[in-house]
Image (cartoon, rainbow, N blue to C red; front, side, top):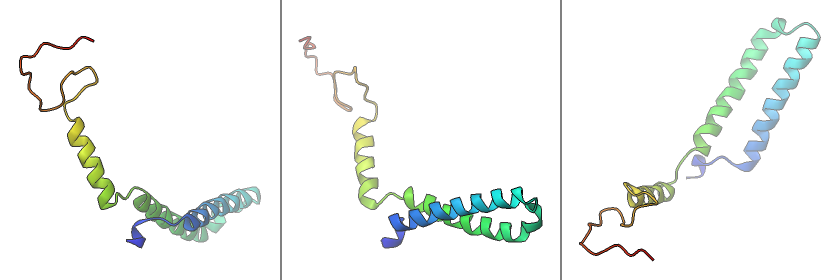
Length: 100
């Protein structure tokens, strides 16, 4: 289960990797060597892209409990609108509406 979440320390490392890549691109561009470093930039981009993918997968993961809670709420609210006087699945039993 630990591999299904993304550790806060790892988030900081990812942010720093993105910032470092940005700094490197800016520096290479300022030196006029941006395209000269294509192979190393592609390698760095690949590493950062892989980590970004892991981050996205782990941060959007629903634990079994969260998925079950979401299902319960979805089931309970299906077909219901705030102006409805009856709960979903409840039939009108012929009682007059309470207009209090």
